[in-house]
Length: 309
Image (cartoon, rainbow, N blue to C red):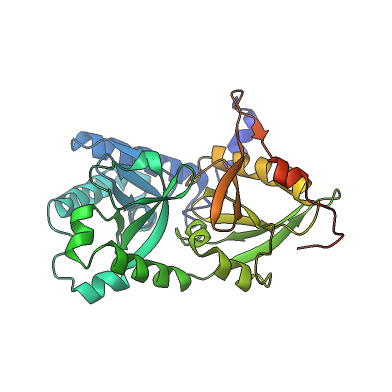
């Protein structure tokens, strides 16, 4: 989208993912991070709240952004602050991040997490299974300064995929649903939006029945649930009860593509339909970048039962 003069108005707003600094300052910090990694021989993809390298390593931006914001030298000191931070991270990469951690400590810090299939190599993450079309369920080790996707060698070292997945799902169940709201329109479309600061908010989809219970929806029912996870910190669901499913699907499809395209911790631009434990894609980006809604005949045939979710 072309930049306008009004775009500068947003520079002084609080950054959504680094709220202690502004949008403009956060943008500069992210640029400095990319440069610092490149100068140290490591190419990374920069997201709004973390960077990811080609080995699957994920490094959060909260600490370095906070260090920049609090440095008494002001913005002139930021290149030095960022450089020192990146060199410290890369030095840590050279060591075993599991060193000193017992199996119990690793289990306590492991979370089941959604990850785009394109982000990990099957050679090193063979345990990762498809959770939804295009998205894998992986195991993440959550440390104070970084979140690392566990490799096959790490998983086997600390109990195997079954035991670690059990721990990861248990820890996921303890993640709070910080903010919930119902989005509605005049044509009867509606969905529940869950959002928060946790990078595991979208991954709550892996325990969907728990989410529905916490939203006071109870069991999903025979027609299932629509869900979208456009970014790591947002999850939207619509329990299918009646013919409002079609306008709700259209509304969710627009929401998913718009939030995904915003570039803030993107995860998936699609809307999915869950029923009887199986996920199907019911909206995806079209060739023109707009949303393509592809409801199945099963969705189209749902009777209008006159109820609400």
